[in-house]
Amino acid sequence: MGAHRFFTTARLSAKATVELTGPEHHHLKNVRRLTLGSQVTLIDGKGSIAQARIDQIDRNSTHLHVATTETAPSPKHCWTLGLALIRPKLLELAIEKGIELGIDRFLLFPADYSEARPPSDERLEAICIGALKQSGRLFLPEIAHAKRLEIPDEPSFFGSLEPVAKPLSKLPQRATFFIGPEGGFSQEELELLAQSGPIYLGPHILRAETAAIALAAQVAALSI
Image (cartoon, rainbow, N blue to C red):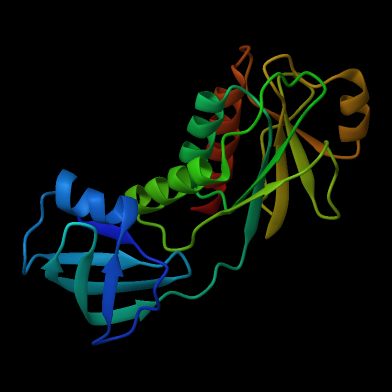
């Protein structure tokens, strides 16, 4: 993956002109310090990737000429990581690493022992875009919100430290994987999760964000 990768919501087509503004323009101009004529990669989070040339850099925007485009097929799977709300910085870390490991969707919910509110939608979008660009993925994961823990009508699992739980051995095309907050799931939530499969995360007590990454890593290992 090239170092100069930028996100845009513009439609990517050959010979089109794309304008970057806001954080992406700032990153190109002030962080990467790219100049006229530089070649960059553009992605739209919907499977399209383009090679483009910088034609104009203004104070508040950058204009690029698209040379070539490609579109990847949509993924055949949808793996959701259900995350109980934890401290924002730790939640952001879990989402960032989850994207790097291949999670397609995040479901955020307040668990009985949650003590935090989620970051703003703008902040979550920035985290997702940054991880998308860094990881080389082409489809921007979705972030959804629920009012409480709810078991979906699809295969679901939850992280567990109990020895009776087993590591994930088979990966369905659609599945939701739940991780609790710092204080763990309440007894009522565990009873609700009884209809899901427990996934063994190892013999050691893990922080919530570590548990999320460990579970996502199991999913990633099975998808290779």
